[in-house]
Image (cartoon, rainbow, N blue to C red; front, side, top):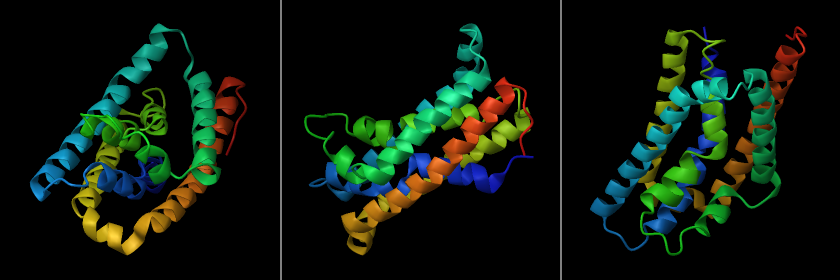
Length: 205
């Protein structure tokens, strides 16, 4: 059985629904309610499609390239850790991704779907948390459901973005994004340790 809490926290940290709200507000400023709703739904759909692609194709691609999952788990953990450090010490997600808006016609896809929701960290997490050698089909389905629920939550927040923007502001979203970065760093460290344990056949608790 999967660790529901751990899986939820992992996806919540890398998808960062709260940090996505300021990005959504910035790219939809000047649009009417109907257009904003379409952009939110379209962005969520494409983010889900990208992550589902990695769930289905990530493992086979590694197998075809003869890359052991333990190596991908270690490298993925390192990338997640670096990603977490940028969340904690670098520009916050809202500040960083607002700069990607200029000149983009398909804003629902970029930067909203990728890299805001379907971030590099989320892509790696979707592969690591649905590894067919560690998890059965039902466990993988449960993980995918949790991932989709986090995306739905992000969509709900975007649909209520105007109220949330007044309540949190950019400062509040920045603080929450950094807290998520600290949590993500611990998740990434766990992936690295488990990857090293698997590669060197060292038991770990």
